[in-house]
Image 1 (cartoon, rainbow over the protein chains, first blue to last red):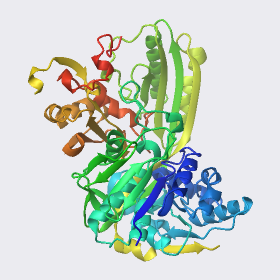
Image 2: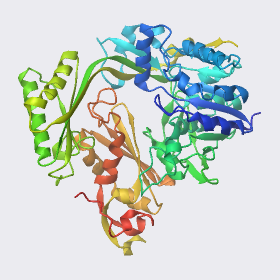
Image 3: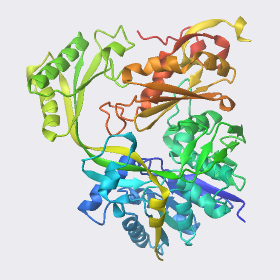
Image 4: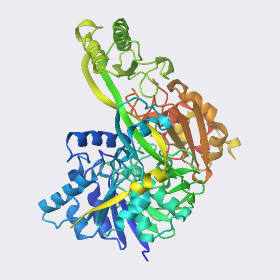
Length: 457
Length: 132
């Protein structure tokens, strides 16, 4: 039986560092045991955008960065028999698999045997009415809106079934992010599907790896208070997992960043609600008894994770057309600049109202009251802002139609010649939006549709 | 133990760190003590109600605190604070990634200086954290 599994997290979101996997692959090559490299690149909205590109071109709909991530490491992956598990497939994992083998050909490598997991795309087997009328857990009401994408979160069991096809690479669409790690562990250790404590441990291991360098010192540095060495070359994480479910989080030698109890604790609680009940399709994980022990420099041993039975319902994300977002900015600086910036915002608000717009416009003044204040001047903690400061007006709204969004931008731009003194640096954008909601579906609706297709050597 | 220590009025940033994460219209902000000795002080003083007040201007409708004594940490789950969430918000920071610094910077309290890490700039008499 496998004693130890090494899993490295090569990307934490769709725009993560393209060269991060290079030191990981070198590290994995030196490890004695089963070796995996995962790339988590699929946010909730990313899959909806991918779905739209697939409608435009049936050969698209997977991560546009597939080559950027894989080209630097594909040869070493092949040479050292490192398995890859990724959601780069997005809305079209089959096309992504073909692309990988095309890339292998270009690099003079024999093709990979790639498993493609499907069943997450609900639009293939559930009708639009059922999806739009399902009760929502959170997010928008969907009824009567234009459906863009509907994907259910598959679990680690489905990923393990794909690995069982004796493949080099598994490409998935929507799974829980942690399933990219739990899947390999189920496959290697053969954990029973009701061994809740181990399933929970594998899930939390995945939770810690899925955001890449967020567990190794990134999203953490606060200079002078929480210093992190060599963040420009931050090492991405590697987990060494034992059959017991205990695991060590570490990173390759000679990379930047750090792995400490503090970095692991922050990432453990990241995007977590009730720590006694972190729900994924395979299990409910309880980290209230989790404890961390230092096991050498940049090595943290994680133990004490408990689990309870898996949920009977699975979460799905449904995306509908969300209108357009307008964002427009203009700067004021020097003497009395805050008053000039406020006047600029007031002028635009007045003109928008007079033009018949009665929705909400968000007003930020960057440098005075912005992200922490909700654009609300009265909430600002800064009572004595500099009289000669550097302030930037930012106005934004979301509207169903493009015209209203564009009008907001135009109105701010007009202030170049028709506003307060010395406004400069106008920038704007109008971007199409996706509105989303989470729904719950019985697993019996989903499980019959999960399928694995193999793109052969 | 802390009763005979010198007290100073400082933000939680002096004794704890944390990070914000988003799920839908809910943000969770963790609060982790630099020194385990600070856990009890935080548990007594940083209540869900007080944290709710700090986020009320963003629309927060409720706050739940979860305690993790083995990690000297807390998890604050803040409902309805993200202007509809990442796909609906009109904020520059649609994920609310910056929101951990409301808890760290705007929760100001008299604290025993023993709880501050030895290397902290807050222990430097010349260090000024207040604005302007």
